[in-house]
Length: 485
Image (cartoon, rainbow, N blue to C red; front, side):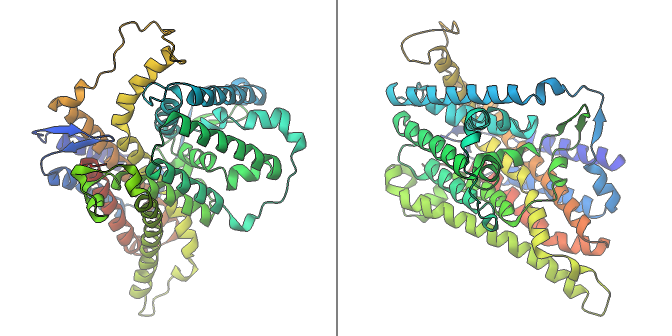
């Protein structure tokens, strides 16, 4: 318990260090805060907090590391009549499907202004930003509000063909679809155009229903439907879990549920790395650095149509690069252990599988992917969330005012004030640092589970620690890097 208190003090200290750094001037870009002064002190402070946590956990006994992720029982009712009611769950899903079709119609026939039309605001602000963030706190919301399972369970299930889906390809189809989805976000010339987006959403809904009818819901959701896979993994970061059959609630450090997942496959591990890699490139492709690499003047950006292929190949390259770096870190760790055991000492390293380590350590990138997504889109949520409220009051764009917001105005004034911009950026940076600290603890938990000796754990942790520290620097740099796209 004393070390746990010390770790929380370390996290608090990182807040204090960041909070006492001065900002002279700042402005906002499309996706984040751009600091106009050198940001070395911010990045160094965040990286030091993460590195300190790595050093501290390296000297802990294994049982202490395991103790961090032990959950405790909460004396709360499970509300089985609500959470275990399949009929109610299907009704919510069917209502969600109706809402999606309503949005598709609005996108097709409504205003083409993406800040007024309900479709792009609901997809990109409510679903892709807010609901994405909520999964890491509240659990698998998507299992309730996805627009497919209710209609399938109540109407389409009897006509399902149950064609055998090749299990040996694992989640590769989901990886392809997810990267293609991110390519649409990054490389498409107008992903927030209501009419264009309505065709995209309708096509994906129809594609999913056809796949479910042919192959069945279980295989489709586990191997192809990338968002069900994504949100189920994100939900494992939630500190809360409601147990079935009156088992009550359990709570623990974020990530404890993910570490209990022993059935992750190699393709699911690659999927998790794709979430991190795609999200990272989503930030990189807006930076001056990237635009210079593709020979684009960042101060005279010619438009998205001029960089479609560069963005597409960029996101593919970013994911392949991340797969390789992650695999190399694990290989180097195993090689280092073998080298220090080369003098005839007995070692159990030969029994440790590279694939097992790859699969389980991939789980530790979940917090990084989650906090980077949240920090990357925070300012977008703050601004476009206001437009969404206005659109909810007038969903058809005909001058209605269902929420009674007569004098409602969207404001971005807080993005022009040094004090408020400073608080926003520090919130983003703190999210990144805390997420990386949790990732470090999760990685050390996995490593300690696979190696018996303290020396092996520390040696293997070296390349993993370098990877984590580098990604911390990278994430903080992205937050502050000038944007030109």
